Length: 387
Image (cartoon, rainbow, N blue to C red; front, side, top):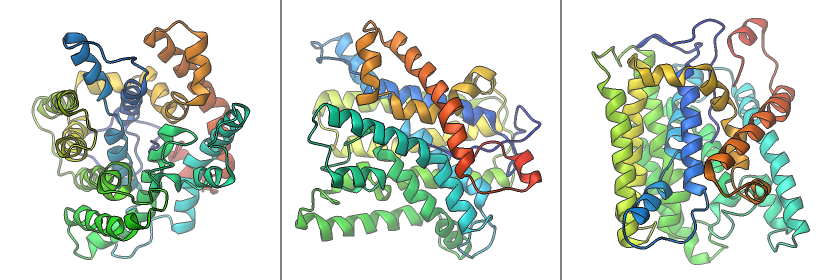
């Protein structure tokens, strides 16, 4: 769930419609905390499904709280904003070496450390997951291409493969756009490629490697590319000042309500069909949520609202910056000690995981990231404090 974060030594609020290729957008950092909480709700062990009624409706609503589309869209927006060279070549603005090292430093060190810790714990529990092949698939971020292995190790970290695929594809996406390939057409091309990979590889039964169309749509970059492309499109409009400064807050309010409405629709769909691969569920997840998230982002980028002020505050900045650590430890073997040692009250457990994740961010994530991050000029260091 990581996203490149842009910083500046000055502003605490971004000017709507202004270019921020070197600026700090605090509301988007704060939104990462909201997205992480939604993921927590989605993964929190709710227990058995209650009898029909309000309790069941609420459980389905909570279970369909999705924060991942917000994080994917945010990544698309910020990568395009920062690394678009403005030319038709396929080279990131800072060069491939700097670009890839920066992405690696942002994601991999903490993930690798926690993955090894997770498998050490699973080995102690004598889990069948602990084999050289599965460990290698996790450390190389390849396990998410296999239906059989996507939830091994740190289960929720399957989505990191989506980010890594986009990081590799982004310079080509931007270059192809400059060469005349419309942005809206590119996710359709990727969807076609994913469909072709399923047709080619699914019959081979290689541990679920592109094993089905629902798997490809729900768990691979080919199915989830729309979120990234909405972010890239927003970045282009934001940089060129074409988002404007609309009167009122209709984009922000509309985005929040639309996101909630799609979530309610997902809950109702699951309550009716009990099938995460149902076509309506896939459409709501892969089209409805990105559309709602795009409207919300447009509002946060162009409107002055109380919600934007809240997300830009110091508390949400700290929560947003530590959201990657939170994402990696909020579920799975490393979180069991929290759930087992505390009363079964979700708010208390959320607070405990939040505190631990902030400590991880300050004491582990930042030092490791700085150690691996490519050298920068003095001017660049003053402008970018967190990538």
